[in-house]
Image (cartoon, rainbow, N blue to C red):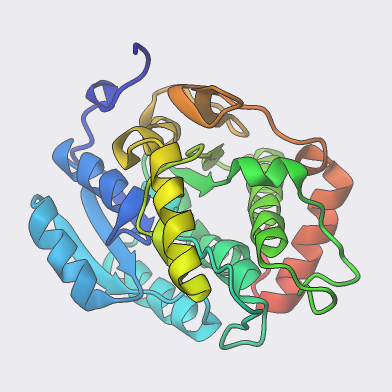
Length: 301
């Protein structure tokens, strides 16, 4: 199989990259490749013990910092300390995500946990780091979407999914919200004349540690479903390529969206992926942005 590979990542020496959820899965591979190509990588992780173990395996210029995206207090503390130590950063990879197929759960701030982790935490983090990104060299933000965004719909009358909760639908909504955020961020950055570029990627169906954990609540049946899921997914090293391309390829334009080319975008070589109509609707983008500003207390652009 030909196409874009990690060997095409340009030299990253002199660049500071922040990767959320970098202690395992897609985030770990992303952080590893960036460090191998010379970047100073900040592993932004909820479990710093797991983060330190991951850092030892990565080698290179790596540091570990605590970040719980489901807590706005944690997001603010992380951003404040990071900006104090690194007044300029060059890359923010909003990779971390929750896939929780059990009962409805809420974050420390009372938000539905998928939306809190996958979108609202990253919305706040990006805003709080925007000045440090603006000071960076060829600065870029990468938002991690999912093919599930294509079948999702945002219900602004029940954004926290308090009525008729379904976990799979909540995950899809959170990934649609993440995608809308990435596109609306691009619109606003371009409108403001900012040097920061907002890009997006999705991994198709990829084998990560989230695959079995998502089904833990189903007991033995969940173990069988998780095993079948592992057979149907592509290796994490391949699933990470779209976000690595979005993060590092020279000349990437704001709003570009990368994903796998094969079998309904579930696997294969990296290509430009298709966005849903709702994801690119400016009216949806404006409304979600306003909601996110109110919910997080972080306003920018």
